[in-house]
Image 1: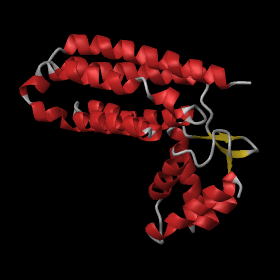
Image 2 (image 1 turned 90 degrees about the vertical axis):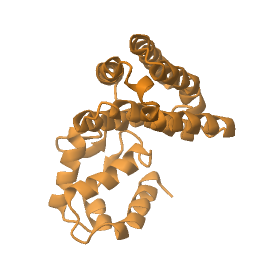
Image 3 (image 1 turned 45 degrees about the vertical axis):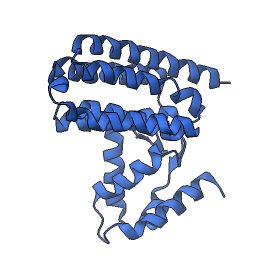
Image 4 (image 1 turned 90 degrees about the horizontal axis):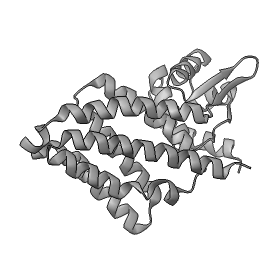
Length: 234
């Protein structure tokens, strides 16, 4: 079975969960999940004819979903060629991490002693660290990666800003595209302990130290990802 056919079959299995008159947002949500989970590799073309038939939606609805995902950086429209899953360049990754530093660093710096005064505030992050540690022990490196994504999403959520949450969700979707094809253990193993160490600093109310540690963490993560991508090129 081809990758494209497997992708279409997976979509078909989910169509029953969509309303008959599906909105573009619902279609975009379904496609977003499928693309970021690696059902189609970066550079793959999406067939408007096939998808509209499988999803049982109009082409106008599908085009609007494509437009939404294009704004998120997950799809690109190429003139006279069609719609494709985005391929992130190294410059794109550098930019993603620049935005991550700005968002996550600001959240950590502004926490101050809030976490020390309200220990329950960090319960979602503690659960993510526990999930990542357990997944690593099982050798479930995909699970480690998911726990890591959740950790950073929950860190940003401490700001209580829906806009920052939305921006982080988009950044993480782009990162998942960059992760595709890389060895999962090599990609995710170093960050289990880093997340635990960062959490300890935040929990202790040592916001300045936590912000500095986070900046070093993100610098190391970017360098690591770029090196893995370079090693995987022919």
